[in-house]
Length: 271
Length: 176
Image (cartoon, rainbow over all chains, first blue to last red; front, side, top):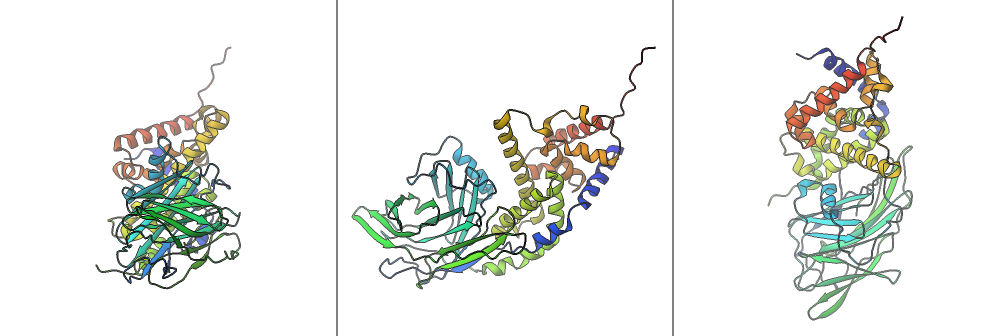
């Protein structure tokens, strides 16, 4: 039988809960939490990514936490060795139910991980106050020709101007290294592991090409041109983010963009 | 392999949100003691649940999964704040300060709420899960990822602290 304190505690907690601002429920009810879905196409016949005619859909949720470092301090263009405990912290941030990552990419204090099966991949980025995740799905397993790479990716930014861009995808047999060339002439070395590659960077500078290295040499494949990020349209009291995305799938040439409104400093958009 | 479009899989997610949003928000509010923070946490929680919905929807208790995500987000955020405060000024979190000197002798329900606000977030989470969500010790342990024994001891310490805070002020001895 509960004692008097326990009974008072139940009543006090119910009283406190009843004081909750009803507008909070209305605001939270108005948000569309569903991951966005898009169709994407390989960019050019020259790059010859083999997707077996499958229609691919890429969906994503980005969430930059309120503590996100505006300039992604400490980010490196070349992957770095993770600090002790860094990967464990990343795994915890990404959620325990995703299993083991097929690829982890550390750049200074930030760790990006890919969790994947034959049709779905989850990408998670965390560290130094940043937290972001996304999901890509396809209706059929994706295969990539030897020496080629799949090109998924996109970018997002919040209303405060914090932005990041990432490219990732499966790699074909024989690919040993991938370097991403950017529109400003600089390059970012991707992490390559277990049939995947991944690179990301702060800001909105677009990926233009990938230098794909195999035992027989290096070849260049182009990334799709990306749309200009639209100005967010925010409802009153909301915080908005805009993003774009591209990816390989059904042979069309396309790139998508989206704007999603969320409250406070969190960001949600599609890639 | 049969494949359902993502939006087909997500059809029942809106029903899940409609049926559980208020309770999740109230739980977050009571654990964090802050409406704005509770709103952010619930939003983050539901984005996470939505992203994993195809797997969550077939669980025996999707609500329990969402509650676990929510409470752990809240405790992670509180832990981060405590660590940052510690790095900043080396002082313990306000919630870790002895409460007796501040709140001794308080007796009303309002005063009980003030005492609750002084508990550590983890102690408060245990009491909220046990006495607001009416979870058993085993269910609370599952939410928090700890043993039922840990829940029992945390709840016991939290209640003891409340009893201490709410205890009547002993009459001071007067020298005649």
